[in-house]
Image: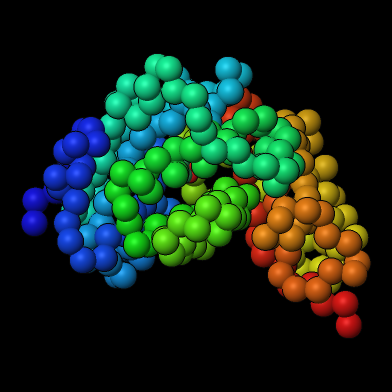
Length: 278
Ligand code: PAF
């Protein structure tokens, strides 16, 4: 089947097939992490839609909206190779009316951790994801665990707004040396890249410990050892469903998450850690 590129909502509605539809929302600059999402969608659904839309609503004026990589032709090759049925690539004007008023608010959970570092970011993410859900009407949507707080908020939105959509999450894909794949990695110089490895090393060191205080301390030690080139935004150990910090009384799966700037590039990463009081 030929890949269809839908450049506006009307074309998408015409191109959308029957049977179970899976949506993989992306901002393009596709890499193997996205390919892993697409493969899960392909394995589960009759019809796979990949959206490629750099969403201005989730960037603050200090963020990198104009700098965000745009590699549309290469992205189409990836989609063809992965057997995607439709790429939805709307223009900003097609997604947002100039006088738009209403959006989704991410609530308290959207203003902690990554949301504290990027005010309004998750409102923008949830607004575009809800719009994509409404336009594409998938039965299944696939997201990466790398954006753990985004994933938790999308699950929360689906529950709180009664959206009839299954959310499937897929593990982070890493380079052999541990660096989590990200569209922003292309901005790292060789030196930046060496410094950036401290993120995954810190998470591994933390995950080898058993109590919240030791997990945080072990991870922090690795981050501190990376020196001033690594500008750490946060290191947190949180409940994956709420993103509230956990303490020694917590039982179950927690997420150890980190964000840091290396040169001009901001990176995030996380791992799951199982905590037991006993
Ligand atoms: O994870 C992303 O690439 C974006 O935040 C998403 C979910 C496509 C919304 O713009």
